[in-house]
Image (cartoon, rainbow, N blue to C red; front, side, top):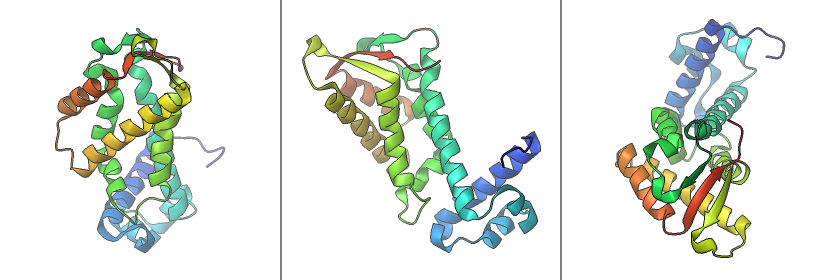
Length: 199
């Protein structure tokens, strides 16, 4: 809420409410979830819920926005020292975004549900595209001339497709195995990547 002081306790309460919503979506679908369900599951009362959120839609929006913000922040971590990386030197540390998704897999598993968090299926891929468009410059192999907007979209949505598949398989591959496959694919069409976002 605007003007409120954010305290560790308040953050913890919001986190519990968000975790309750995730569990309940998986159990019964977003449309069927009620505020009563959320407070019962999180063991809070209704007044505590309404202190933080107007309704379940505000809770859902806050959850989605905070998780996607974390996704963007995770991207910058590997580039604190080196901004340009040749694809032959990519490694697991180059893909903190993958670790972030795995660490928060309870949330990202929601993309496998039909009746899920509103706008998740559109905002998640759009965030990946935004990251690729605003935070990276790509160099093609042998400087092959291509429309770089097409190239960036192709690469971003391709990566999103791989992430979606990995999530839908229940993370069958380990993080290391998944990243290794992504790197091999990147090396087929990309010579280097430069991070241009803020550190």
